[in-house]
Length: 601
Image (cartoon, rainbow, N blue to C red; front, side, top):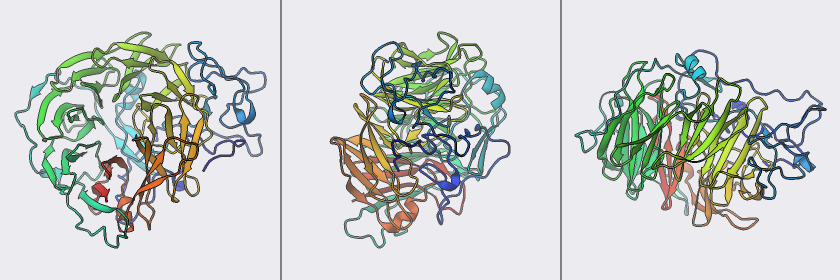
């Protein structure tokens, strides 16, 4: 629901939501037969307390504009720009100069918004990774990582950092997957058209369930099911210790599942141009095991390619967890304070990204269309700040470097090309969304009144730069969902040239509508199911000032319970088919969880 221009937002983008109130990304009461969240551990939450609002009856500030005490100077934004005096509704009357003194485009200079620091949206549990961050924080976080969400708590315990082997790429001797799951890997996650008759009662014109697959057995504490890759022949999915492939047409196995000796701890969200991915799995089962074993996989055949062990870095450079991305032919493996690049085809080590500049340690990477590194600089000194670099994927050399002002942290990338950065200031309880040109100059700053309902994974103890779904962008426009408060939400198109709103489109149902991707001049969006109606896929023309959604799929009501029963999910749209897959397995043997669900005509 949009806010009137003279009222402050209710909570702000990224504000913590009361789990009882719901909202996109918030934990929902499970439906019948829906998977249950994993059991809670003990210990205090790691999230900071929410910011306190003004006392009842106190004057309210204009939307998003941080008010200053009398006689105090205005505070700069994430890129060091002092906000101008506010005009109507809190907007500055004149644009402020950019971070390097350049004059911005019209509309630039909207002040950073007040918000609860951290990642936008309320993520489903289990979607975060282990700690990755500063040296001082690593020391206190090695014993236990505690995540809390709406009364459900998750514990992740890891030991100290061992010495893994030096990275060596080598053939495995096993050209195919290792056959059906065995032992504690559980179910064969077999595919099938519609054995439960989810298409019963399907009305004329509605889509149908093409096929779906059961999730494999998982530990009682739950397990991650990261990644979903769609090729021209198969849909491929990782879950716990296995990677499965299903024929697009009927959901039958495209190749034998690949089973790993330990649980999968990271995957490349992208696939290479010739359908290669890399999976990381744990080097052992003990509390001190590291996420340091790499395996390349050919999605077309299921053949296992090169393997490597990720070497640990310096004193505080941990492989408790790693992040993987693919940019062109370069696989980037990020540790807690550095990264190593490999050739995706051969596994040959290409270069390392280590400490640089003013004690800058790269602690997060983002890849896909382009490759970026984010570093924490001078973490124990007086000039503590973040820096963003675009890297040449072939050499690792920085193409440009962008320092942020002290106190501002890079939290998310909403797009890589064009680059759209979401940053937060914990002390000021503010956020900022800015977009940048190809040479690292700030292009615009988002200045739209809305509460954003993007779905983002946990990023409490480490950055998860690409951990948000439900956001899309093209060369000129950012497409953001609003947070549904009552009734339908909206998708807002934001002009990246000036940060202003182009249009808003309301969801055609009383459920949230979320951007998936832009293709052929149209925004493809997904409308969530309700208890008595299936979800929808709609297309929205990206041009014009008042576009209308066109329904591409209306999913059958008979499958609504299953469609809405994913505790957390990934979405994709390809060749007229809607793919939904679980990103977290509950481990509840009675839940009969679905791993993937596919709709089409």
